[in-house]
Length: 219
Image (cartoon, rainbow, N blue to C red):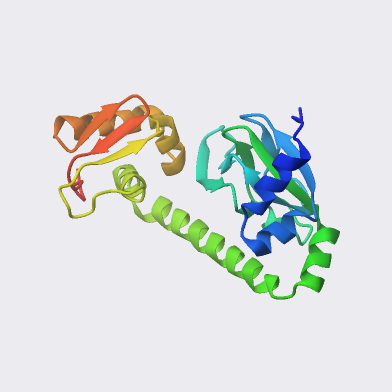
């Protein structure tokens, strides 16, 4: 169900974007979504792009058994859906993780924008390349790292301490979110984190994990 927004609030959110993305957003139709709403479904035909004005979304895929793998999070100021502007099927699903406001552009509106602002085409190509590299890295980890290695990579990629001994607190992160990122069960992730806590490497809290020292490469 869409939530109404005042024109002044919409203008304020668009004004906070980078100029190029702000001009892109003005070509779309505003849509608001409640938390945990699926905006895009993997495999469905796609011919639209979404500029994220407010909120955050999760990009993910599921297999036939319902197991989920999370590719990443997208926050306000960015856009998604560009991989299907060729009219092909969506390569992943997208779900809101909090109330979200988007500007929805049709393929025709996007083509018009590129015609009038051809420099944006390079930004679009760069975005596709960045996300393709990210997807390749995810596939590499799934193929070459064991579950522990994927858990460590996920933790340390979120401001992990590296070689320092300075504790780093990761907030708003759950065992289930980590499990979705690494393609494992929540129970397995919880066991690994409990073992690391016993070893003095981490401290576990409610939606919080404190990295107390560099995590071991093997366990």
